[in-house]
Length: 357
Ligand code: DAH
Image 1 (cartoon, rainbow, N blue to C red):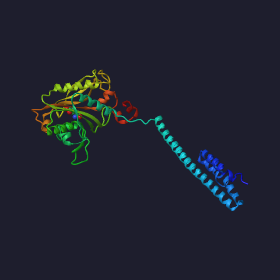
Image 2: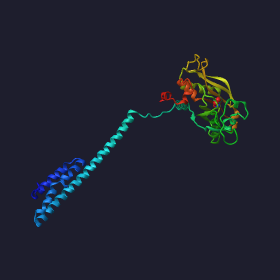
Image 3: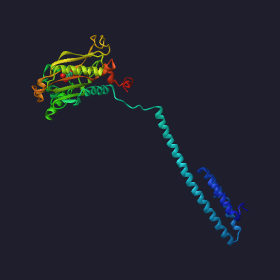
Image 4: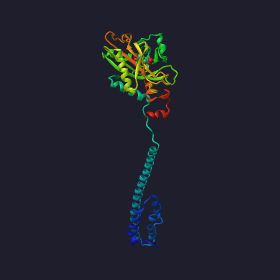
């Protein structure tokens, strides 16, 4: 005889339902299923015992057992669905935590963000100084025509002054007509042209940018370098205005201890022309290897606009005059940050770069 009798079928169903409710994992459910409802269950034994009953009794008992089985099957199916859902949620949670670990790894080994380099920072600082003095900032192309880079600046073909600039020519059009600009001075020409066409004189502007020369790099020269050009076109401008701007800039950018001086020089586009020097910041003017014992470092050139340049862009030199200057941004960075060798600026040594973050 089975342990279970038809009389306590309801009690049995209730207690199996409680057991099903207590199952906490799918594994447990799979393990317990045969004894709760399957072949080894009490319900199954009861079913087998029905054969000994009369037909009528068997029918009623069979229906009751069927009913009990459906109830339990239903409860097991629902429990299985709930447990499966729970377990999936737990697995997802574990994966999410794995992801969390990756984030934690990033905190341990932080990915450092980049920052602007010494040249960009220097260019910005120089722009700020000139903007503070009322200048605007303009830019021009790095690939130029011979006309803007040379001819309009009063440097005709075969002029010996072309030897001052060792030029990279671009293989485009007729030979030696397209080039990488050797200085930022062609941007002055472009600016004057557009001011004339827009009737927008006077001009007070600085023009920073990259330039190229066929120079062999050394401690004070790079074949790709940066200049900042300055241009003032106005009425009644004197050499005193130029000297005043240079001196004001020097003090604002390098500090009160640094002096500027102008020495006579030669540039085809200015007359008179001067070379612009500042106290060597490395030795404070006493004389050292960097300044060849002179106490002065040359930053660039300047001068009063040559009437030929004004005429080349259609400006009347009897009404308008002005001055221009151009100097090395890299050289300014070198002086300001005491960089012994300019090549450090392009070598991308992280220890050098990190100093400017
Ligand atoms: N362009 C000259 C150079 O690269 C520097 C220069 C000199 C610019 C005199 C000027 C200037 O505007 O007036 O050597």
